Image (cartoon, rainbow, N blue to C red; front, top):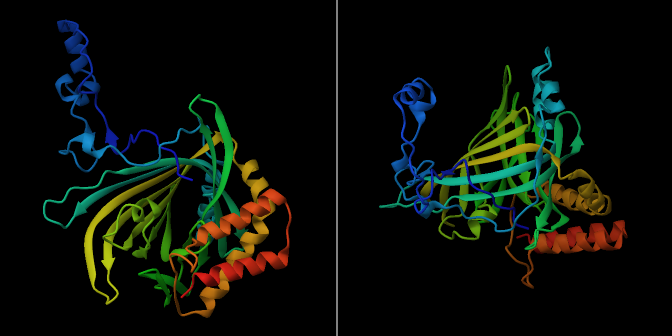
Length: 392
C-alpha cells in the first residue's frame, strides 16, 4: 500500500501561479507605504513580479515545474493534530533523570499515532551536467506500538492504518498493513552490517559504551540495517545521531533506479513536543561484486511524525494484531536464530516459483486474520520454510 501524497510545502514552495489572472492593483497612499515600511513584513515581502517563479529547496535556480514531487496518488482522510505536548514529552523532560533513563524515555516517546510525511530530495551529483531527479514526497497515518521493553532492549512496531476517500469523497477504511520495525539495544556488541548485493555480515560494534544500536527491519521482518549511535540530552533537545550506515535501497528508489545498490549515510532522530523527526543525510553508492565502489550523488531526507487524535488508529491495528501477532513472533524469532547462526547471508529477490518474501508472509497473515484460526505448529513451520527459500 502506497502512502498518500499532499502538497510538498517544505521542499517545493510555489510563490504563485504563472498563469493566474492578475487582480487590479490598489493605489497605495504615502501613509500606507510608511506603515508598511515600518513592519517586519516589509523586509520579507516578495514583489509581485517574482511570485510566479516558484522556489525549490536546495535547487533555487531550477524551473519548479521540473521538480514537482513524485509519490502516491490516492487521497486520504482528513486528520486532526493533537493539541499541546505529548505526555511522553513531559516525562522525558522531568528533572533529575539519569542519562540511561533519558535515553529510554526518548526511544519510548516515539510510540503513538501519527501523520507521517516522507520528504526526499537529491542534493548533489557527480556526473557532468548533473540534474536531480524529481523530489519524493508521500504521507501516511501510522501507529507505533511498544512491542517489547526489557530495559536495555526496546522494540517498536510500526503499522500503516489508512483511510481513503473514493472518487465520490466517501471515506473507505481502515486498511491496516504491518509496516517496519525498529529494535534498540543498549551497548550492543555485535551488528549485522549491509555490504551491498543483498548481503549482510556480522561486525563488531564500534564504541558501544554508553550508546545504542538501532536495528531496522522491513515490513516482512527481514533485516534492513543496523547502526550504532548516541543520544544527546541538553535541556529540551533530545537527539540521537548515528554512525555512517550502509543499507539497501528503499522501495521509493529501487522501483525507479538501477544504477546504484547501496544507500549510506547518517541518521538523526529528534524528539519534539508532538512527535519526532528523522533526518537523513544519504549518499548513493554502487558496490560491484568485485568490491569496486562508485559514488553517484547524495540526498537529504526529512521524515516528520506528528501526533494525531483523528482518525483513531490503535483499535484497528489491535484487531489485526490480535489475530496475527503469534505468526509474526515466529517470523521474528526465526530471523533472530538465522542471523545468530550465520556469519553472513544473502537474500534472494524471488524464490524458485517467482514469489516475493513479503508477499508470502502477508498472504499467510491475511488468511489468519480472515479465518481467526491459530495453529502454532503450522505458523512456525510456515515462517521457517518461507524464510529458508529466500536465503543463500
